[in-house]
Length: 406
Image (cartoon, rainbow, N blue to C red):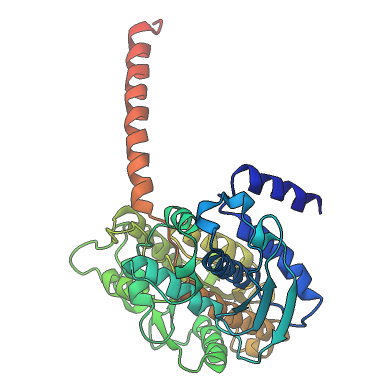
């Protein structure tokens, strides 16, 4: 109640030109709707209702345009019936009182409609902003002052070229098997990858999966995207650019990840040094979610997962929770994953399920909600600051050379 009183005062003192009034009253309205319905509209839907009601209120009040906003009060506007554009309910709003729409009495009529997909609605909004096209629905009926505020606060989103590649066709999961064994030798790491592939397809039958055994390729050492003649890393990099799910898989050797896994990390560093998307400056792994598969004996799996995730976060991946899938055997020489029946381990099978479900959820979320950040703009600011720092360092070094006692 105290919040409501303060907001009324702010509304009047600003003559009603407060772009946040709909947000406040949507929250207030939602608590009242809760007592009348089992399945309440979201706060965003209620914001749409209130904006529509404000438009209808202005249309029905003859003296509206000539009266200060804080003094508007139609004598007999009657109830306004606002129908949810998302089909959840009908809200009847009776307008009365000093500030019109601020005093509400509700009667709710439940309407059975399927619940919409909020992610699809978000994408439609962003696409409309990006193309500067008007879209149907309550957004177009917002008051001019509110629409101006929203337009200024939410500029059109520029999409990365990598998002465009990741948004076509079914989801794509790419495994980089960093075993030290070339084909056709048996790979315990690949066997654990196959378990995860099985779980991914169980929950998303249309998903495209691919396991690349890096040892079969001539990946030269270096930190560039192409190290010249004979380098086959660019072929693998093309697959990385379009994957929605990226899973490096590695055996533990001497307590750490294999040398091939280390080389993959070193080569991926090149994707952050060369601007590959001129529009946004985003790296190829932006918009990709990441898991990690580890096999080996004794210990080292946690070290492999922690180091690999930390490195890949620097390259732009998103890491969902519980997406590390590993198996390690007893201390000393002994049976590896396949021989020990590691696929039957209750812990491994549970982790495979968690990894598959969380990777799929996050991949779909990022596909529908790409990162809006423009790294290119931040890089320009960093370069300008770097010039100032370099100039200061040069002066400092020169001063020390001239004044340092011998």
